[in-house]
Length: 277
Length: 306
Image 1 (cartoon, helix red, strand yellow):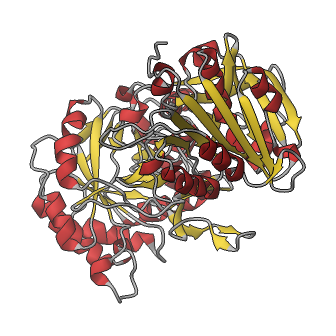
Image 2 (cartoon, helix red, strand yellow; image 1 turned 180 degrees about the horizontal axis):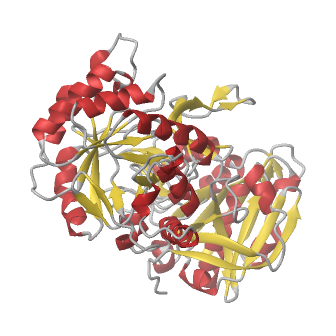
């Protein structure tokens, strides 16, 4: 699929803006150009309300899914901006900039026969990962999804994910759904069971398994420590407070092994081993 | 109608410029607007040595504003000359290069790099840099110290033939005094204001939100304060003033010019809408039409008319 690499300010109609779980909304926008240009892992900068200086800044939201009509964004109401966004109605014109960021690199997953992909999602982190799962499953890649959250109500997208044919493993802190554990427990158990094929490359990395993860930084830090023991390659999608979202203001810095990088431009997806936790 | 703005012998096609630190070197904005429409681009501040910048979080939104503590992250002037300078020279838009340093010597060395006859259009001195060389005095920013401000401007004027704009901090008791010092040092113009110092607190974690705790406030919240600063400085100096502070619309731009500015810089606005400078210019022209004003320069200081 050819992507022009272009970014645009898009003002299009809202198709729907509906609550999917307490405090969680799915916003569908009639934006066919954006749908065509977006890659899994990219994001958009959304204006919660037009013609206002408060909220002043746009909100960075991961692209959740797309079809020929447009894109879907899934967001959680956490503050003034997202609260205002939740009141926007079908038919309203919404103003967004995108597609932004680098997106997940799935070339190896798509081109390597027999590759097993592990998806690790902490709570709301499943939002950008869902689009990745769809792409991988469309190409018949074997996908195991591990979702962890505090409680049953915060496990999102379970039915959608099951429909893709991916295998789903759920864990909640309070045990109201799936295993009563952090997501690391079932994931580590799975890795121990698997016969991870090592490749005699200069980096000694596993050739049989790839991991993509998104979630709270604490979860990613712990996951990173665990994955390094199995020599698997992994990509993590990060987030940061942003101002411009397009790489100009140097606000969304994250420390990596090569110094500060910008989450909006060099990311949001980073190689796990480059991130300094 | 005539939008041409003449400052320090340089002819700018219009008075709508972009503020340092908000527009990169222009490259990121090319997808969204024709850079040629902007009167001038003021580049991200460059320092003698590379600076890593402050630990994150570096930005946080406040009511109608933005608190930032980027920390002047930049690759240093050597790398800037090699990598960014050639791109900037090719642009049709007038370029103003912002420089800063911990003290007189560092700034002087930076200024010495600018030996090209006609480029950049001007140098903007970012004097809101923590005053390391002065450590221990009551001034934590160079631009709080009138004597040092004057000395640095004078030194930079000797180092380069390019016009010099002194960018002032509002974190002072009397900004007009500092503007006067810059003028005495030979500044061709002053630009004001830089950001207002502030902090943001997370009550639940009981910690400051910014990695550096203290940041600078910008955006619409500071407009009334910035307008007052321009008004104060206009009463004091004869050199042109470039107004900065919460400009989001063509009317905002007009307000600053009425208060005494000959040109304006829109900064934080660029984060709300990357194409906003085009919109500001359009609205500014519409305003001049409605008021039947033939030349933008007629607005300058009109607030003072009896």
